[in-house]
Length: 94
Image (cartoon, rainbow, N blue to C red; front, top):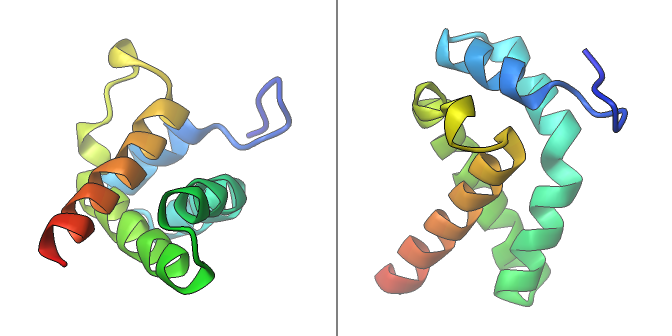
């Protein structure tokens, strides 16, 4: 369902992901992948590690979608925080 900005209702998609809805994950990816990739590219500086960061981020989102709480902030903030979390973990493991 589009919101005021013409993007999918990310919070609703996250709730559906938490319920195991794979179509919701696909819709979430479609609605957010460009922005997630831009942030990933900004953090890593190169396309290949940015793509890897995106893949790991969406795996994390799938596993942790139930942890999203709309009272704590927007779905975008939660999603982009996952990108930062994964980036820090990958950097620490390198």
